[in-house]
Length: 398
Ligand code: KIV
Ligand code: ZN
Image 1 (cartoon, protein in one colour):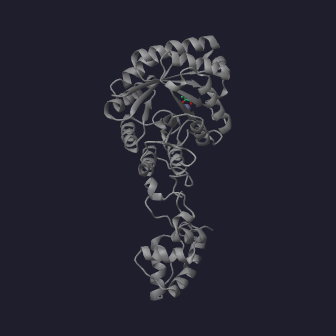
Image 2 (cartoon, protein in one colour):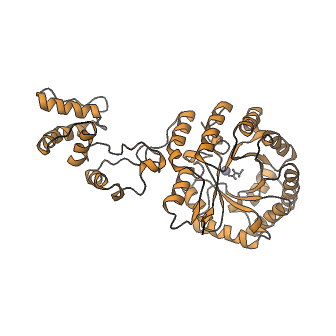
Image 3 (tube, helix red, strand yellow):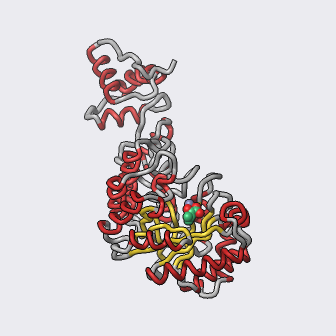
């Protein structure tokens, strides 16, 4: 049986860019949107058109120029927001209006200053209005995971009856846990009349570091759309990271019998492109796309990886488009890795020569964070000619 499809909804251009230092201009949004299409995302949320004229223009350009994925624009459950969002996305051949309203008591009382009845009324009216403009309407009950479940289900039911085609369940403040979230998704699917005719989506924030785990728990419970961002950028601690979601579903297909449309070998270059646009890197140990994600320095690991990459790698760097240089030399490296590195540089060395070079290499690695190819070649030529050994440069540790 064909595995079911999980739709990947990328919100790097909307929730992602709401993070400090992550705002993008129209030209940057267009470049990233084209790359997201190449990556194979199903839906691109291009922005929040009511937020500014610039954002409305960016959404309009993405809708007009990026053919293939659905292009969504965000709107509060407010008539003007929805009208402006529709004007921005309508030139796409696949437009979507994504409208949201908070359902938790704390948001109703302190942010919106309305009661539950009014929230229910606004949801029904505004989803109906959005549906009168656009056939594809997504509704999100903001702060769903801190909402009363019965009230949440009432609001979702009203949204479906008013024409919503996707119901997105946001963990707006990154509060839920995987088991609790899975239970919530199951409850919604059981209680909602007509649940089988809408797509249930998940949208998780990473305040407790659980965004990816919670999203996957949602998928296990039947969600078929995941909202995420490249490099996990987003409000506060970020959103669920697209690359992690896509690779868990791919590598652990035994646990998740679903598929996405993501082209895995485009993942790394998409991550690099976003870093370049934003002007900052992901942390080096970031899963899948971090500088060290496929780097092995410990000698015992390097020996294992050189003999068979599967000893210490559950996926190859090439799968996600990382160039294959995964051996990083440092003071934990062994002779095997050193010999391999020299071979890569075109020098097939004898065991005795490697042993001699190894002593100089370890002395240098003890003092420098990174030993570069140039350092190794200096050691080799130094050994062969009796010249001075390389000195530790500016990165010297002590
Ligand atoms: O986190 C959130 O609740 C949101 C909604 C607008 C979907 O970003
Ligand atoms: Zn969000």
